[in-house]
Length: 347
Image (cartoon, rainbow, N blue to C red):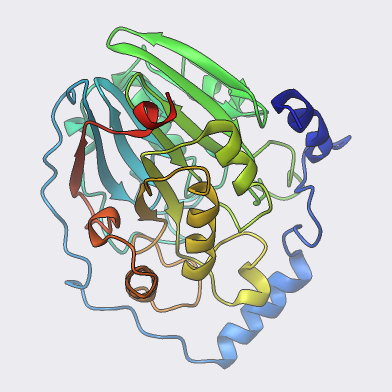
């Protein structure tokens, strides 16, 4: 099947009212199940929050611009990553607010503060938004970034451009799954492609599925990175590898997965994330680095907050993978890969 045929065969995520997950048993749970989960949580004793020193914050060591032969990542927290693909600076799902919520007095509160001060960020060339949930699309952060970085290019899935423009973003691009765009920034050219994810969108009552959700490929002249956004395990990771690999870095969510009967359709647990990693790396001889994200910053679900990184590390060790390829970073920690190999190995 050609790439064009593959894209055409995967157009079923569109509906008359918006978008859906096109795979069997992939739709998220509804209001009745939300109530069931709430009642179950009241009857059971959840693991207490860890101590304040459980997730130490590192001092970031990113440069204003990485060298052309470097791929640098700094984990700000949750799904917010400063990705420096050569001299091009990319920011993913930025949230600096205290709460992931439409209001300041309620909703999930940060367990770990944003590990990089917003005013300390280097100039941002590209901002990627995976979907519109409050822990991934934060209005105060968007407005602050739009004021500080008026020339940044904002890339979002279908349906979000009007909202981003209303919040001050000037240069906004919308992409559907399997679409890509090439941006000529002052510091280098970059290709961004939208790929499938299994999740959903909503910011209030009655708007579920009105805007799209996606994952992202980022390709510079020297490297390729994949940002999965927020997703359950789905059947398209292998196709993503065929279309956009090989990769130097995979940024995959590993947290917010319990209870499984409720979260399985929207979030991966560590075994599923490692399965996605293997499928995304299936077309390449040299395994990419893995940056686990979406853990330790907000308490969103029922598993102990320390469990996702510990479980991921244990699985990685059991599979015999190179320990140096698991970038299990502290909040704020910077990791630099010199001379990424994906484009050399695919050329």
